[in-house]
Image (cartoon, rainbow, N blue to C red; front, side):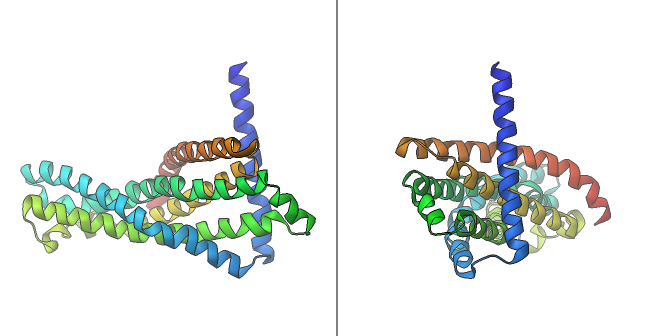
Length: 257
């Protein structure tokens, strides 16, 4: 019985998010968007997320670079450190670490905002004023996250790259030219495209999941807290599932890029 319960919850989640995505997609295709609302969300969800994402990716790049520099330099492969770091950043660290940070930051923010409006009956007030909640709340947030997640990850990627170089320089004494010598050999534009695709998919999944749980919040402040917790946990789990599926899929596509 417990197994059937969890299966029904998973199917309910997939169906709810799919319907939400379909409604938003129709609004975007038909041009039913408010530019001011979208720009405001781009600033709130995107621009304001850049500092914390850069901080996390900076430490992530530094740690990976320290481990590689210490091991590879001792084995005479120090010239590969920069290329390996950038390859890891593009394929996994930037989209996955960046997505995890955004799942915690903007995912919680969106769910708490919409959840609070739900339990305080502000969403019912919007409907009474003939305002579509998806137009006012969901669509601007979805479009903002889809557009800004790659932008945030670009800044985070630079932080990871330069922090990685600084650690490698301090560890091995190599210069920037030596650090970047293997980049062209190990990294190509296909890796950049894969990073971009993952960033867009992860950003879309985060915002749709957050909106879904926000609209389902009930039971007062405790209900909002449960919705936020569910949103963040499911988002992080979903990111790792999507990362595995996209990695397997894009590995074959990479040949043709």
